[in-house]
Image (tube, rainbow, N blue to C red):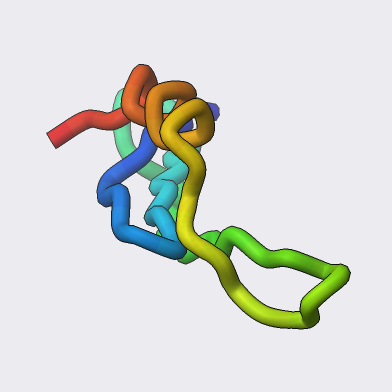
Length: 60
């Protein structure tokens, strides 16, 4: 299984995961994760620390 960040937005980011079998991609998943404030019950912008963390996994 291989995972990486495909996109960083203001309030969300994309992640792709691939499972390779016998040298071929057998399964690919693209998901969008939204940064959420459960106290306010709404999405929120990423903090600078969160953005720095996820940038390390960004692959273009």
